[in-house]
Image (cartoon, rainbow, N blue to C red):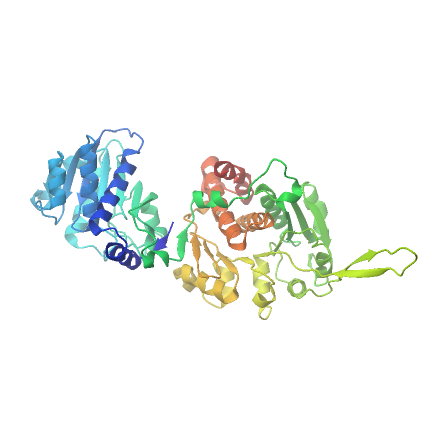
Length: 542
C-alpha cells in the first residue's frame, strides 16, 4: 500500500483526470462503490439493520458519501443524507432521492434535533463531512455539528458501525492532529493510498481499521509511479516468506550466527536465538562470552555454541579471531544484543569488520609419487550483517564504519540509538521519522529499521516501508532482541536486507499485539511472550 501526503494525493487525482484515463467523476463513482462494498461486508451488530445515516459535507468526501448512499439505496437500504453546506439541487443528491433516500438539510435542522433523532436509529453511521484538506481548529458551526453527532452516538443502546471516508472528520491527514470534536471510527476507508497523518498519533487512535479503496489510479499517472513510501500489510509479507519444501534439510534454511550477550545482559542472546529459530532458520549458533554458556545452555538446548574470550564478562577485542574462524557455515550474522558499552567490545567489532586476526583457511592437496604437498588458501568474508542495540552505539564510534561493511547490512536503532549514531536529538528524529530514516539509509548505504510506534524501514534506494502498528505491548525490555533475532533468521534463509527487515518488523509487531490480546493486558507482555506468539502469526501467513 502506498503512503502519501495530502498534496501528493491531490496531484495524483488531477493527473489521473488529465492523463490517467479516469475522470474526477469516475474516481468518485469508484470511491463510492468501494465504500459501499465495505459497508455491505460488515458483520451484524446488536442493532443491525439495513439503514445508514450519513453526514455529507460540501467537498469530495461528501460526493463519495452520496454515491455510496445511492448504491446502498439501490440495494434496498434505508438511507438518510444529512447535508452540510451542500445544495439539495446537487445531481448526486438527486440520485439519492430518486433511489428512495431521505435528505435532511443542516441549515433547517434547529438545535440538531433531526440529527440526533436519526442518529439514534441507525445501524451504520457514515462520516463524509470533512476531508483531507481541513485546517484546525474547526470552525464553530462544524465543531458544533460533530459534537451533536457524537453526543447522539453515545446515547444509542447498541454500537452502530462508524465508517469514515478518507479520515474521521476533524483529523489532519498530514500531521495526525485531531480536533476534540472528531468522532472515532470503526473503519476508515481511505482513497487509493494511506495518508501520512493516519499513521500518526493521536489520529491513529480514531481511525479504527484502515481500508484502502481502489479508485482506479493506474501506472499511467507519473506522481503515482514515483511514490517511494509504502505501508506493509499481510499480503506483502506473505508473498516474501521463503518456501518450506518437503525435501528440505536444516541447511536449506540457513545458519543464523548471533554474537550477543555480556554478564549484565545474559538474556539478550537467548531471546534473539529463540526468535531466529521461531521464524524458520535451520540452525542457530550463539557466539557468547564463555562464562555465560552454563547459564544459557540449560535454558536453550537447540543452538550450537561458539564460546568467545571475555574481559570481566564482556566480549574482548581478541574474540574477533575466534568468531572469524567460525564463519564458514554462517548465512547471516547478528552483532550487538546485550553487548554492553566497554571499549574492548568496540575493538572486537572493529577487528571483525576489518577482518583483523583472520587466518586464511588452508586446505591440503595431495599428489602421488611423493610430489610436494601444496596448499591453497580460501579467502574469508563476512556474511550478511545485522547490527542491533549496543552493537549500533559501538559501531558509531568507529570512523566511517558504514564503509567497512562489505554488503548491505540491516541496522535496527530505536530513537535513542539513532540519536547517538547521527547526532540528531531524539525529539527531532521522532518529529520526522520517515525522512531521517531515509536520509541515513542513503548516506550509509544500508537498511535502517527505525523502531518505535510505526516502525520505519528505509532502504538505500530511497524507499521506505512503515509498519502500521503502535502498541504498548512492544514497549518492553528485550523486545528489540526479539526483532533482531527475527531479522537475522530471515536473512539467513535468503531474504534480502530490506525484505528481512520489513517481514521481521511486521511479524514482530503482530506477535506483540496477539500476545497482549491472549494474555489479557499489554502491560503484562514479556519479550519472551512475543517470541512464543510468532508461530501464530506465521500460521496465518503461510
